[in-house]
Amino acid sequence: MAHGEPGLEARPMDEVKRELIERARGNRNPFLYTIFDEVAPVIEGLRSVEREAWAQAFGALAAPHEARAAQAEAQGDAETARREYLIAYDCYHVARYPAPNSPGKLAAYRKSQELFHKAARTFDPPLERIEMPFRARPGEGKASIGLLRKPKAIERPPVVVLWGGIDAFKEERATEAYLNAGLAALGVDMPGVADAPLAGSQDAERLWDAIFDYIATRADLDSERVAIHGGSTGGYWATKLAHTHAARLRAAVNQGGPAHWAFQKDWIVKAQRGEYPFELAETLACAFGRATAAEWIEYAPRLSLLEQRILDGPCAPLLCVNGIDDTVFPIADMHLLLEHGSPKSARFYRAGHMGGSGAQAAIVEWLKEKLR
Image 1 (cartoon, rainbow, N blue to C red):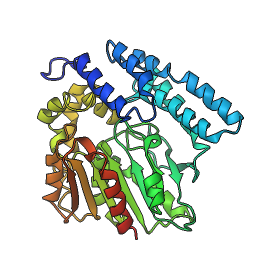
Image 2: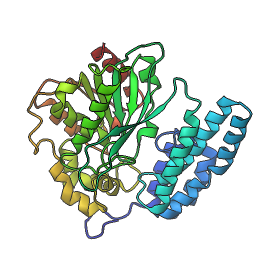
Image 3: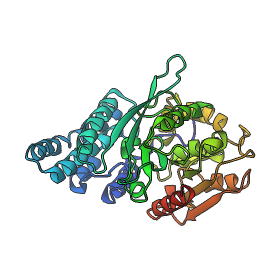
Image 4: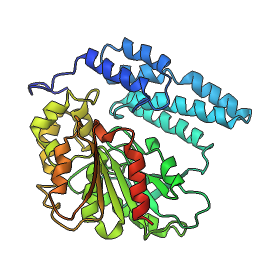
């Protein structure tokens, strides 16, 4: 934690635990498949969010589920194998949460990926791991990794490229609703997280050149009908791409993303005690090549899409979705987008960050219409 900045002191552990317990009870991120009665005692036993101790505590829950999954797989019980592999994966997913920014958390992330792909052997339609060549600068990776699923019985489906934010990676992209709507779903990592080949920066939208170019090489995908859906911090990139890559897109969705006000110091300090459990500024910093909350406060204003002067230009059809009570990123950023450039669609909910449980169905229906 940064010191010397009022409001950036470590969040009291009773607040952290209270938020984590509520998330675990409702199977909300990061507790997607975990069992409440298993994780609750671990949460209650936390003395801090020290990264190595956190990774060890939650990672230790995975072993029995992994063993049951392997046994079920050997016996041909695909349903049990999938369920148990997903629980084991999620124990390690929690262990690396919110970001793999320590040795133990990075090891937990790699283990979570291993178990996710074991679970994915049972997915129907199947999941395909792809590598998309990236034109790297010195020090960057040479490929963007994607997880692709295609709907059944559709020869050249349109494609929705999906990504999350600072703590939800391609493995956490829920794709069933898109597949059921006849849309292929390609999960990727936004800049600065997971397997992304580059850090977040003022021009990291170039990552998607590689993704759109790759889609164009696939005869089994309709590269003339491509949309994007970025969630949370990922919504920032969706908004930027809707402007910078409008010619390559039929539609874009910013669900809960920042644009300008979220990058100002006053909001950053306030959000440290909002609905995000802990280390929001530090995790944002990590995604943009920084480490501390103080470094994030110094760097963040450069990311303002208003200050970058792109919001008044042409824009692909853009849907802005969020909860009006969001304490991670201010709803004022969504209002700002509606005040600039091309007319946009919007759906706001009486809810917190991302708009709550009803948002996903509305997003998929809107995308289905735009990709018709």
